Image (cartoon, rainbow, N blue to C red; front, side, top):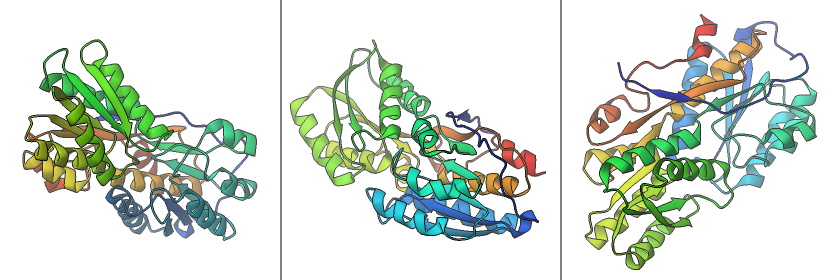
Length: 328
């Protein structure tokens, strides 16, 4: 059995009793996820749909047009909030973009299951609601895993650079924070550049950084798509610079297995999506949900990349799932 590092973030419980269907098997789930232009969220959608089928509940999945479509995502949720769903499963683009769209959901006393990216608790409270549960990764700790791996790969005192996502994004900030905490006093972070979760922007940024810092030893990118762009820049430069990403998308796993990308910290969006459906089914059964449910993360390097690919999109071993236990 593989060992998984399971971590969680904070969330609140709804203060009012929830409206539930007469039978859990009749539950209808509305799910709204980030842009399906990113394979991470394609895999999350697959986990949602396959778990719903396994649990015998109905599910409708809507998605933002792309990773920057905060307004479009909110508009889709607003339309779904007018329909008769028993639970709302939400993966917001930002901490605030879905808050107003969730107000009518809360007014109908429907459970709100927040997965992957958090809704700001203070903004939700000001709007008159709290989420029923949060399911996802502690991004600070995930970033720290990347930092700990970098420490094994480069000499003490080496220079490294960070490629962040969208400016102000809570997940990106947490991941880079965790990395910096892990390497503080041991490695020198010479620059951090935002590349908006975009491969080509990361490629350009990394090319410029490599030119400005010819003695750079490593990069940490806050997601795998950017890490793959950085790796391309490193290959073009002909230098031996370590590149670590975060997410565990299949292209990154293939790159690690091929000896290109150095490592990635794999999250399991399939599992996060599936857990979200489990939470909605429990809510439909009238069960009180845990405030937080940890999602598994695993450091993937050349040693375990092939095994991880074999098991994709699921982890290669068992992992704690309190929701699954509650459904037994």
